Image (cartoon, rainbow, N blue to C red; front, side):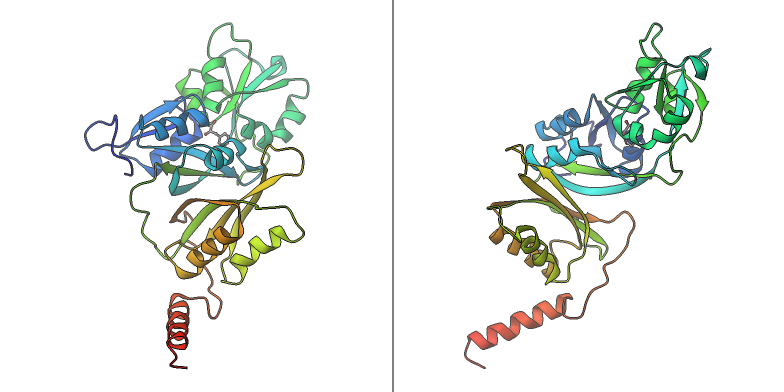
Length: 318
Ligand SMILES: O=C(O)C(=O)Cc1ccccc1
């Protein structure tokens, strides 16, 4: 694990995650690193800070979900915070339950507490079944369940994984309350840079952020062209405000392939020439194991052959 096993027991890596116990994030960590010592953190920023400071060897955080899209705190932390590299990803199906102290009845629920990603994915249920309830954002689903379990809590119910309800002694008043029953959240494991990148597998993803040098017509198109002309397919693009006033944005990209591959490496070099700054966020195996469909002329041997040809031309061989 990159950066050394600071604070871990023996060889067992210590991985921070969005806690407390019972979050979807914990389930993701159990899948991504079953052997790891788990270190619950109060929020996404704290989990990433623990990984940066060496209090943990890495962190597992949510990055996006299939209904609402980006978990923006994670995107912004990866873009602006101390450098971290994604080394693995996981697609976790998520199911939401309405959880309350024993004896609570649904008509009496006036204040619901949960993570913002759960609020956006349970809008239909909330509007239908709890139209008069106020919904309040919590740092995590299990954090909300823990809070609701405290006698005298100002919140009547939490939304979260059924397992969080069991863990904090709540009852499940309703199950599968998400607007869709096929919702998936993508979690990533990040580490401090310094170690080797995960080896290419043939079904990899590369993540990066790019900051424009200046705003002009076609600036985004120019960035996209760096990928397009090398046959690199994008799997996600996200614009995020730089914070320097309205209309100023930077861009997150997820691309198919590994930076060790010529087409991806050359696309990143091209972006580096074009942009004010490019931050590489990692190349790692895709959770869905999908391999890119390579277009003619963009496979590794094509780049190698073209480089040989250019060398011959330059040497005067013609
Ligand atoms: O709060 C949690 O349990 C998390 O892991 C974050 C989250 C919340 C809702 C959907 C997916 C992930």
